[in-house]
Image (cartoon, rainbow, N blue to C red):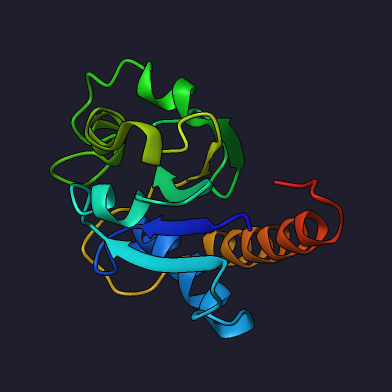
Length: 166
């Protein structure tokens, strides 16, 4: 049985930075959040706690907003985790959380070793620019959150049906 963890990150009082949390809310609304093969977690601005959420999962999906991407708001990026982990992150605002989840992934590899699916991690990033103190997201980011939630559901169904997807 393939066990999947889906973790969304974001700050719900920083406007569009809430996008990861919103995707998780939508997934919990549409999927069974207590399914034995699926763990869906709103991580908020946590990162170090990622370590304990990842143990004993075969596949991991991470969802977050990214600023300074050079792309239009709402643009979706799907990357293997290795690309994020090796990215230069000189700008402390790239991810608006104290310990970045990419750093937490690195620690998880070291701590959990064989219980960590390092070759089966996908990161979804949605381009954002508005991170000012405000509750609620822009329409374009809201649409992107819905589109990503629907894509993840379709991919989960495809994976369940024939072992492919995501």
